[in-house]
Length: 423
Ligand SMILES: [Zn+2]
Image (cartoon, rainbow, N blue to C red; front, side, top):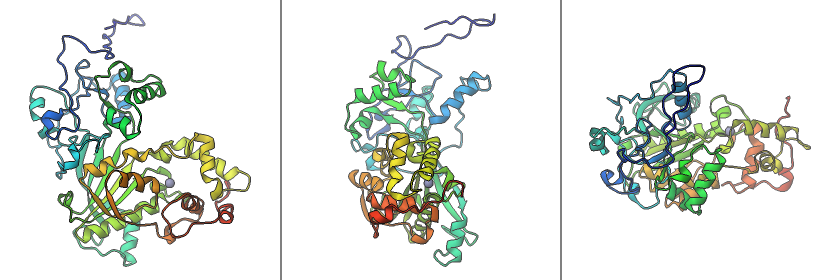
């Protein structure tokens, strides 16, 4: 424990409690037995800062937003000891438990009990432990012009159950913050846990010393974006083998998803995925949209926009045969989404078979299948939904092995199809 001197003549500040080593004389957090079927044996994730010596996880809650919390406390706007009042916050629809929650190595990047802490860990809460949900489940109506258009074109029919005549679709939506079980994450990437911990420590500028000094702490709550899940149809049908599942796993693309930027196919493919989900839900199945916060192939939007400029200014113009190379020039890799962790959320939802996977990406298909989920059909994006400027991306992906009926040849890939930068 260090007691820093006050500055500017003010009274000395609070002691800083280092958490880099186990403390004696404080209550120890309940142990974690990751993958245990019974939540009492599994143990709750304790990552709150109200009792710094008694945590069983490195990092803290709220993913990337934890830094705003830190700023709010530093700015004097938030009491660091505030504990949430969780009255009435329980899930709006039950999800699980499913057998996958306790199958070895099946789920390593989220806490399957994260939405159920109130019931699963009632005893520990009563003892006074500050246990917070890492998953929340609510209900909503969503409205997208593409869905209204699908009704107008006769592709979707309102049923007043899943979809009404005004184009509003009823959904159950889920927000998930990442919880990494480090031994399982290391296994997933075929590396040893020490190498993983060292990489996480060094490449975050030493942000989390406990990754190195506390091998007894096996959980890490990384300061990254999580995932949202939009479920169409009755979520009670999840986990039943007869339920038909349509699914799109979508990685965030703010420019296209929100602003309609036409350089890629992200929003059109997302909207098509939602259309397929609504259709499947109306037929008695469940539609699942997983929306991962992995902007710009998890390289971030600054890198993404730099790549756009490099693509459009290169000799020969924006063309498919240089699509991945330009990203590698800037980022060192063409993609950093690390889809190995992506299937976890599907297992959390009790999915063992996807009847209609709305994706052409092998980088998504292969990890899903490798994780033990059967995929019956892969649904490509309809050609008439591809914006003109996005044909560069589409050709490059088809040539790189995306699921498609048409693989472009070298001559086609060398054609400049994208707009010029100032056009
Ligand atoms: Zn995009």
